[in-house]
Length: 225
Image 1: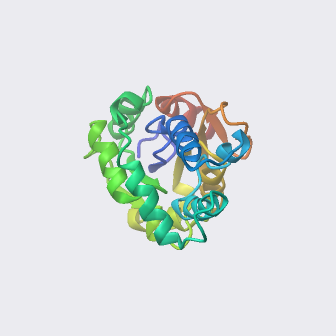
Image 2: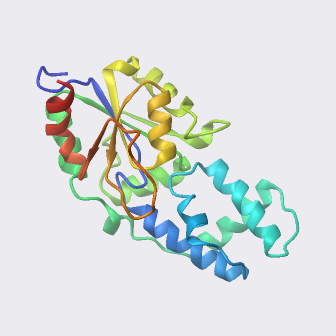
């Protein structure tokens, strides 16, 4: 860590921060719900932004029941949805957010370590990173699927800190959603929120809001240096 950057490591969320997948997944869920023949409100879809895989699967069980498919187990709902999702193609490279490569490069130039803590499954994380030219970008990668509960539970961040060997006060994270911001704060991290105004939730609990990932290079020293 250099004197001109106040944190030893920055932990990134993936969906909404690295890639603009939140809107893509929102639209995908609308298509899926329509295929089931159930009416889903915008508010229900908004509530899924940033949710953990575990929470998403619980919602799927409810949706299948509403569609008259009976009461599935979480595993059954997951397998059925995964089979459908495999028919959908996503160009993750086209969804790469501006400033991601520049931000990561700038942090590394300053001697700052970078990690990734995402609620997504590890195979999806690796697919996204490969598509975006970021396969080797992160020193530590942690998937929320490995925990009983992911964000807003802080365990995913506490585990990432343990793998980095750093205390929370020496690190910050970049998030976008309420579950992610909450998880970061509960873990004791300084939380930067990448601005998101499309889904009706507040980012006020974050310590600072930035428009692009590389904005952290200037914002962190200015606000916390």
